[in-house]
Length: 133
Image 1 (cartoon, helix red, strand yellow):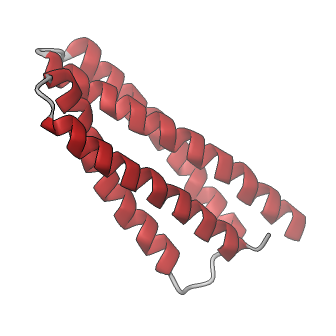
Image 2 (cartoon, one colour; image 1 turned 90 degrees about the vertical axis):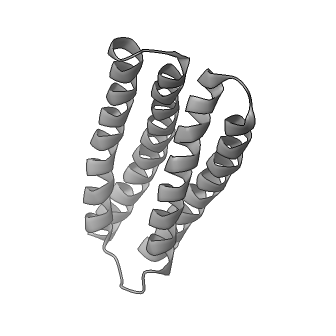
């Protein structure tokens, strides 16, 4: 599988997650439960940011090397772990009310999905780079 094709597949997966996050975020924000509103806020915000990142990646005209994408995804895997830790810290230490707790849970959910996605594609790009070397 060529690098650009795999990169587009990654972008489409991120767009699908982003759209689902945005839709779910809006729905949860409309509910009268502050915990769910916190989760919804994070889903909406992360969905908007992720869809922008995905669209930039998909429409990038520049040829990408498997090595560069692998390096980028490796960095993202560690950032995703950091996001989940921030969510845990928010929920454990800054839990003032259920809305804040919901935000922490929302960050953990988004970080966990991105961790899985980035790790999966990191392994794919790494194997692609090794097979072409």
